Image (cartoon, rainbow over all chains, first blue to last red; front, side, top):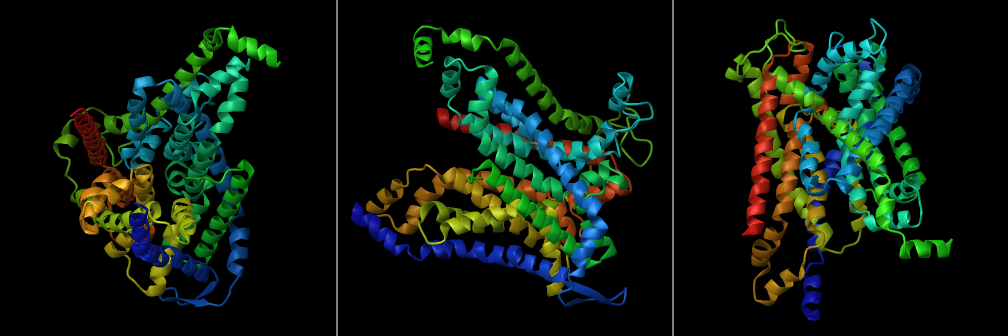
Length: 291
Length: 280
């Protein structure tokens, strides 16, 4: 038996490399190299005519200075929106994930299926639906107005809250699922034990449930925060010119204005801020198993 | 403290301790129900507005009930073509990514080799980079290479983000299998190829199917990356986005509802089939 195992191990010495090579080569060319292209473009200057623009790579760092000075508001707004959306996702997802993990009994799979179902509809169409729901003549605005939560002539669409609401809705699934997975792993006897030891509900929650669900909180907040800070659809459909995010600027500079160096520099800035944030956050929560 | 706890464990009825949070429990359940309702709110609107009879160009406010949209779901050929193209791209890119990603996952689970953890970490990167940056980076690569954006560049981009999702899904499903079955098969004289097709593949097929479905859905739904590398090619999400700027026909809602219902049916059939097999 041991002989068979070792011989099969010897035989497969280069096999694993042959198996991972195709995928790694592919990702090398179409995931890693593009970032070098992006970095190179961000340090180039535009020349030539409007109709036939040329890019010259000349370590032009001014693109970065311009990115910060021109789009400071958008940068701050983007990360504020993404942060608030992540917190809202956490707040909304926790009770649902908790009930699915501990209280759903035999309806667990049914409720999980129901949670995933809305995400079978294209992201863009869901966001269009929010446009209808939050419309000025919609029932949400009139209901909020009737109970005095919204001033007359007040609106929801085209405000920061509409954009944050859209970001929250579109990525909440990535908070619910990791939270559910980590809550599900908690041995219910630990919670009972804490109660047997006279801990209040609040103490059981803060001392047992919350610490044990941290891997889910961490994974969930990253999976919401990262796409939310790169999004431009919600700001485009649900916001106004006062709610533009970095994504909107990158998209516009790349595809409409075609000022590639400026757009590339801004993309690099976005990526860098996210990377630093992810590192700090991962360190603060003190866990490294993301997946 | 210790003695108190000991007596508590010995004498107190845990039921009374557990019974106390009745109100908290109720509030928790109501909160969860409301969140579930919130998840479905836009879906109700989408289904309802597939029966709307819009007066202007935009299907944003309720004007009246009609079955007309459902009678002519393919009224706009551009919409139908975009949907067909998206299905095509999703199928082709998934097929390519499935081969690359599955091989990678098998190697990661089954083999010990130098640099395994590095590969593991590397795989997370595409999932933790914002799509707008991935799209922008790919666009700069294609510009540098002088490649025209279109069908091929879209497929290339989709394969790039699908590989990670597929490798991770297959890997997650492969953990905890009894791999000595492979040794048993070879001990009984089966060739490595026969062992792979008769033992290994049937074991990992459920994981591969789940990964393929996820990849297909992600490709069909992708807007941001596609937007950067599409050139003048119009996929389903790109059609929807263009519609928001010009005119939103209710057929968009009809097709979205139809896709939702079809996925629901497939999901239900899949669950029933699996249950039947377990019972049999």
